[in-house]
Length: 108
Image 1 (cartoon, rainbow, N blue to C red):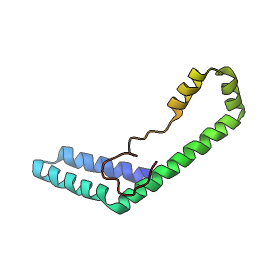
Image 2 (spheres, helix red, strand yellow; image 1 turned 60 degrees about the vertical axis):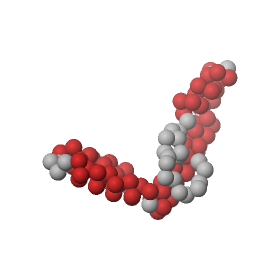
Image 3 (cartoon, one colour; image 1 turned 90 degrees about the vertical axis):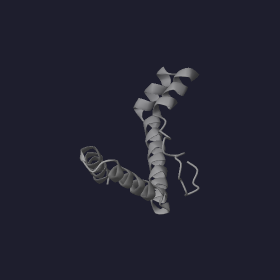
């Protein structure tokens, strides 16, 4: 799925940058892309994907903390400042969570 999305993104970018049709065609593509993104089905799928990513992140973080590596990291970084720094470095990006046009009503 990710490969297809990257391919389509590259294809769209190549078309927009390489076309000689001008600004009108660019605006048409942009409007269509915006319509697709604002579609409730697409927003729901994005919400599901975000929820799955957060779940996988949490599970992975818990597994690392329960492993020997996690134990080793917790014994070497016993100060609160290093723990908060580690959490900041490991926290998932919420750049899409608050995007304009989200219609699912789901809180991430």
